Amino acid sequence: MPKYKNRTSAETIEEANKIAKSTQRPGQSKEQTKLIAQGIQKGIEQYKKQYKSKARELDKKIKSFKNVKSETSLDIKQNNGKSEKNSSAMVLVTRLLPWALLILSWIGFIAYSQQ
Image (cartoon, rainbow, N blue to C red; front, side, top):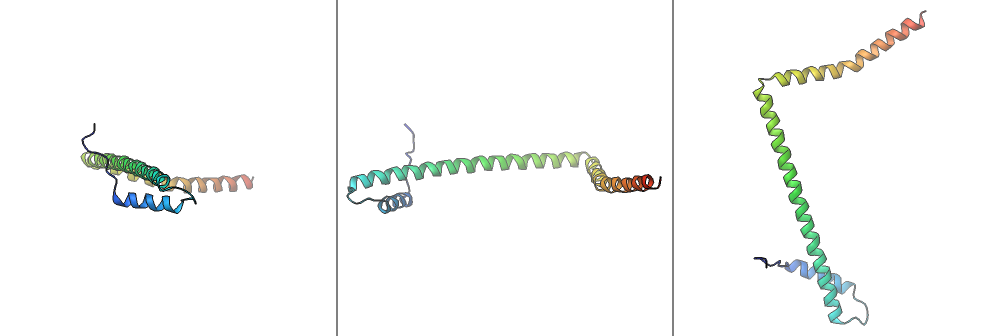
């Protein structure tokens, strides 16, 4: 038996009762409405549990991402900037490569058209 019972908040109970009363059919007894309200209440509780578990998983993923990010920044600092120089060279190459290819293609087009 669990140490703590799953207690439902008063807001959840009120919300379930409002929904049950708004969907009440003519000739429906109070007992039936009460059972419907309990079902709605259980549904709301289950939804909240799922939402909380998803939020916890997301927090864990964010923490692990932050840890990985901080570890890589530490690695960069430990390499005395070698990685920073390599990354700046890569950025320069990726910026210049398309322009170099464009210029070469135009030179090739001009050379081909003058033959």
